[in-house]
Figure 1 (cartoon, rainbow, N blue to C red):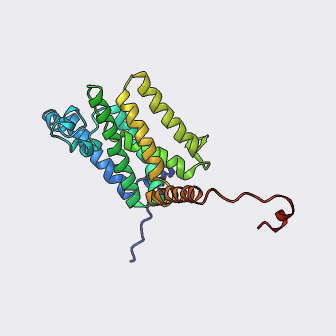
Figure 2: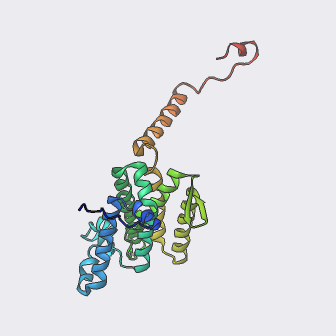
Figure 3: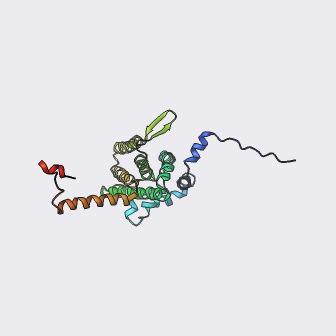
Length: 243
């Protein structure tokens, strides 16, 4: 007798939609965030250790590693949930568009720059920066998502479709308004820096393209100054010989 091959049960469409956006890179980030959050929730004695890793007032007092390790420490349940949703919604599409290396650079670079802005502003105002987690890194992903896909329509929910640009603008406006309501000036500074970082790091060609464009403009401006300006369009009979 021959064995009859068993048919695998068909997966629901929503499971395929979820798994399609969980790339290996996104899965690793989710595992790190979930592990530190579970450590905070289920291990009471872990809080002193996590307080030395999360972004705090000691970042400029002998604990500079908090600028990097703070991206993996999220102690607020609601923010933790929104970070996972933001990673799932934008992460895979941004990674497939710019590549894994540029995606990691964008995520870590924007997050660290945002943490520097938050910690620096809090230090100047003599306040505590407070926990930030990877919120600013996810924020930069939304900005990059809006720049890459621009006017392309995206389905946010069944029957609810917006352009990528509109989603990015709403996200930035929501973050700024929420921070302004809380009067959290350091976080506003972090949002501005993360927005700029996400916008420029998502540029076609990356920072090299941005630097090349800026350098070309400087060279054109220098040429105009040294050459006395671009030649004007001739008038009269000489106009027909103008090329």
